Length: 149
Length: 147
Image (cartoon, rainbow over all chains, first blue to last red; front, side):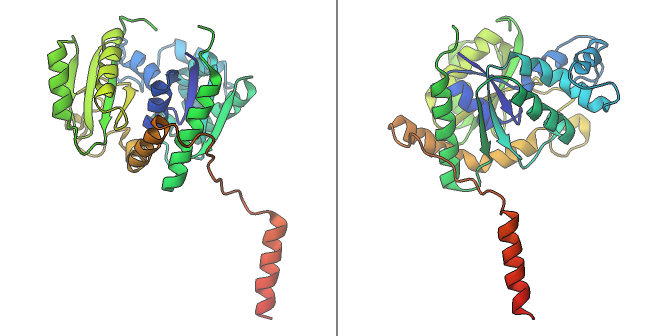
């Protein structure tokens, strides 16, 4: 099983396909879930703990807007775990954790600096492209094998 | 990742013959120790990671190409997400689903093709931006028509 980072990180289709083809999707929902279930936060995941800015500072400098650093506290640990990535270029819509264009640029940049296999795709707009989208992800994940385990 | 962590998963149905109630009954039959919420798109299940993963696998097996599953950050009925406390409006996360939902039938037919062993090596046709020189030619041709 290979840990596959997905972008947009809240995508149902990407998360499902990677899980379905036998790998582990690294999605932001997992990190949000940890925050939600941490006792002591008034309004998770909007609140952050004193530890979060430190995690965010690893990826973005102190003068970078706090929203970027806060989001990187969620996305950064996923990026570090990633052994492969499926990136959908210019997704139509980004809300919530994916709603910050600067964070998304930084995430895309950081994925590319890692020496891991990356599949870049566009969001499908036609039936043919939607089918090809699935086939390309299937072929890519097939090529990853079963990882180290 | 710990097997005892509490997680939630969304089970999204895009089927003409499986209903959320069919899935709920199967979960009750399995006596799995999880919380289930029936929704308009399918189900939300919550419980220990090991149990939720197992139930999700069983649910997918019912209608593999028409059931889509992803992990969800917030538990079912969470006050931060539930519209009762937020005065209505779409839930955060709705917009992403709204974009992806129309493609689910196509994803289903692609998964059926994979099952049949078809479509290997199919590539998407990506529309690349037009080259600047070609764009200049087009402008010059169009402008010349009006001179």
